Length: 364
Image (cartoon, rainbow, N blue to C red; front, side, top):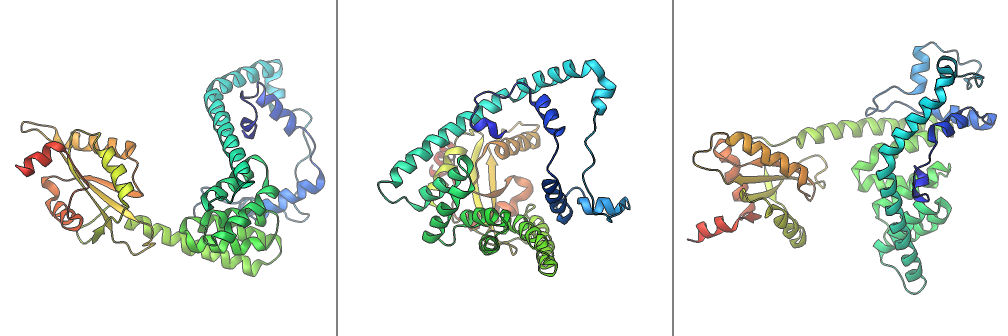
């Protein structure tokens, strides 16, 4: 799919090309490098399948001599069983794939060209005057995507010279250096993990793999343990953010006026909403990652017989369509949760959104 950066149309024969690539010999040194890397990978708590090493041990695979890739087959199973039907079947599969992927491919190509133009504009601007930190970051990450790592490294370093706590620049530079077996990447990943809990699992996994490749198993296991502890915290944090309960405490949402106005504008697009309250739940795990509660009062009708169904339909629409400022739990405020409505009103002081009709009724 990287070809979508340069080609406006998807390739015509991807599966035939893949078959040719898989039937081509691989350099022995490259084989051993891939095998060592795969065997060093360890199963993490979030993985859905065990790592290669664990699967081979379960099969009682002999590790003496070390594992190697099997010899290339002269006739594949597809060639043996499908015979002359293989080519037309492959061509039909390619036709279906081409039809399915064509729109996404063109969209990716169009996006890439837009990014390329933006990068060119930043390059021209950088030649004339200093870029802002945000512009410098965009220049670095787009250079990585479109040009390559070596050109991107000094640009990422430049971003961090100006803003040492830039999470994304630290993380990206750390991953690049670790992939090059450069130990300096550890410090950058450590900085990113200290600033952003979401980067801990992937960061520790990268450092673990690097240390294993260096034969530093004791240090590597420390990062494995760190990943396990963080996974436990993530589980507890998810439980804490799975809704709300009677004993929960709330605080004002703390959003900027611009973000609040954007949310108000979105809510105004739902005529059935009478008013809405937004608060931030007080959480103990990762408190810097906000968890919001959006309580919505729906304008019902006196003779309405399926109010619970319509309540849920509104919640589903809001969950699908609203661009919330962060992780947000959306609920309907009605007679079944009067205590929650009271708590939200007390904390928020005023609704984040109120329909014109409701404002008029309150004024009168």
